[in-house]
Image: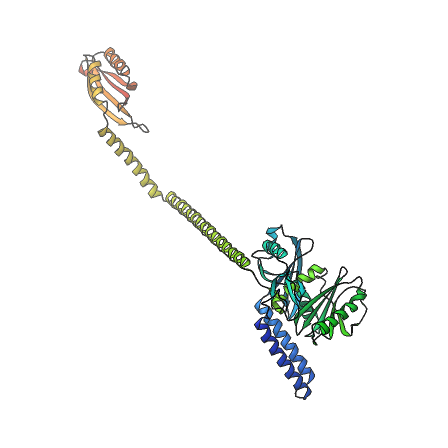
Length: 468
């Protein structure tokens, strides 16, 4: 075990699961040899167990997202789902780290981040050891790249795993007849990567320069020799899964191993998409995962607090909007009720007559109140009449009437007799010269022969009732 990874261990649930699987598999093998169970039944049992596993995975989580940091600085995200017991690629997308809004939109549900790791026995320059690594070789990550990527994807990453995990997860997910132990061979851009999986656990990853596909077999032979002679292990796989490398690969075996070409879905056409899909499948299979440092945990808590704050803000906006809508609805309802009330008032004739009578009564009451509270010109009028009346003119009656629409005006009717018509004319001239009596007119004038041939007259005029 390398000194750079002092606390490596296999996850407990992985140990228990594989021990149980091994015991069940051994029992089924013994029953098959003893004739207690036939081969078709055994196959159905295995298929049922596989379907149960896929059903359990899909029940726990419906969507799996994997993210890797490509060499050109972009982020590649693969989205996979379980449909009818099989893995289905939903899509592959890529963007640059500077596009923060797209990062939040695409990874809001969380994603597994695959990190480029270096596998070795011991290297003091390597940091951040992985949890769940195996005896012999250990994946480690350089902290500089780790911090840069994690800072950009803070709050959107659920776990950190080795980017090479696709060498284990993709053969198990997309191969028709997956084996428990196998050698994964991946060739890209003059570099061949070989992953050694033992009992469905990724034990080690090797990378060699490879100028052509034909050199893959030689690379597999070098890995076998290192495994058996340097690591002193005798559990090297007997089967190889070779990722579709194009037309250059023609062999049916790889250094004596039973070779099988792994055909991936057409959506996984590039190397970055393949690695992102492998990272997405990591929660379903035991792959080496990196410890999460305290700083990352703090960012996760900070993201949680921001989400809670955003939720409270949205709640306040919703409450404010609901209150506004409720007030608007109440105002509209009140306006409708008021309109309906006035409509019914207009339709009620008896009520309209009553309102009209009430208005007239109110005007009279106000006029009477004003007459009692404000000083009027009646005293001035009586004084004026005594001053301008000729000696041979006598007043018999004085009558008043309210002028419609004019609260400050009153109609006056003066009746009397005079000895000559000239006296009546002088009296009318005096009324007109007063300044507050207007519209003076002689309504009637006639001679009374039975009473000494006197002139009887009736004068109408309008007076401003209140003082300004």
